[in-house]
Image 1 (cartoon, rainbow, N blue to C red):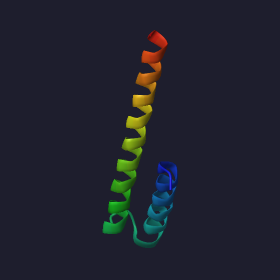
Image 2: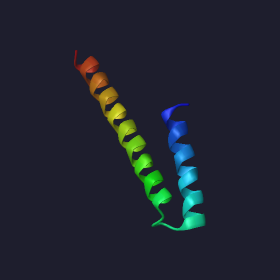
Image 3: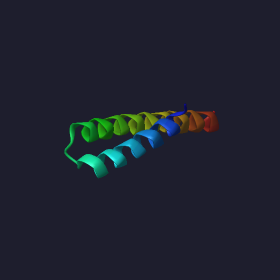
Length: 59
């Protein structure tokens, strides 16, 4: 399962939890935190790739 799959799966679970339990439910909050972590990890990977690409271009 890729990071994108994890993000999408967690997002779907969070939406379902919000619909069933509301925004302040503990499960919804936990899923939201997991989603934040996955997204931050994706952003870090993206930044590292950009830095590497820029370094490669600059020589």
